[in-house]
Image 1 (cartoon, helix red, strand yellow):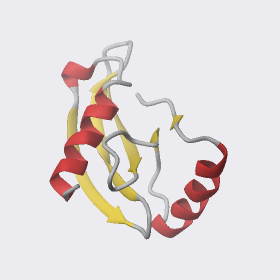
Image 2 (cartoon, rainbow, N blue to C red):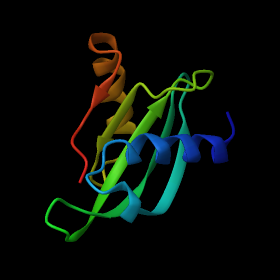
Image 3 (cartoon, helix red, strand yellow):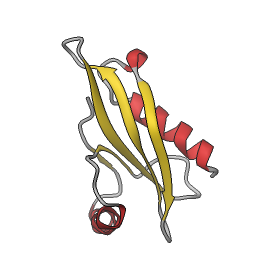
Image 4 (spheres, rainbow, N blue to C red):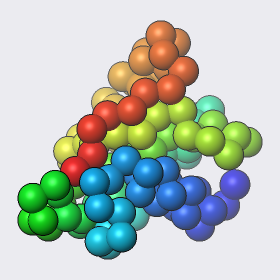
Length: 102
């Protein structure tokens, strides 16, 4: 999976969890490949249930050869290495996790 494909799939996955996906505007996308996982992070501006536009950080995690994410969630500006370690632990417990987005 190329970086562009990973970003596109990440955006599609995030859109499925937004209250108002038609209002979504993505920015600050970045891709990081660890030994066995592909991480896509960025920001999304979208309307919440009250119509206010809110910016949320997101992270979507893939196994490089799999088209579907193993984790989708809201994130702050966490250090990559710290988060990768915690995801590796979560992955052993739950194969797919979803965290509330906007």
